[in-house]
Length: 115
Image (cartoon, rainbow, N blue to C red):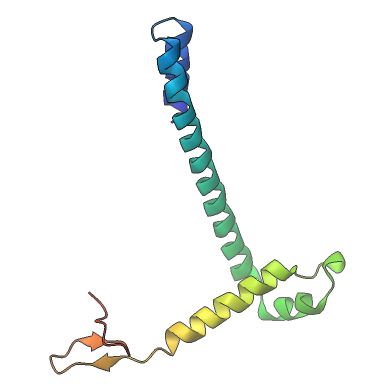
């Protein structure tokens, strides 16, 4: 996208395209670039958070859980993330599976699983 914006700007500077066309196309490209940068940053942050969580031992989590933030304790957002992932794991692992007469797995509502 950035290459497209650069190419469009070069064409406009060289007077190969009109002002109307340039100013019509640029806002859309800039919005797309901004959205993609945001998605990239969010993805990189999620990867870093998972790596940090994976590399933190249970005893370290326990120790930092009760410390104030000023002393290296977890902020409330990190605590919420730990709780959310623990609850997600607990609810996903305890969801019952039922089997139909045809041998297909379903959940409690009768929705088919696996396909």
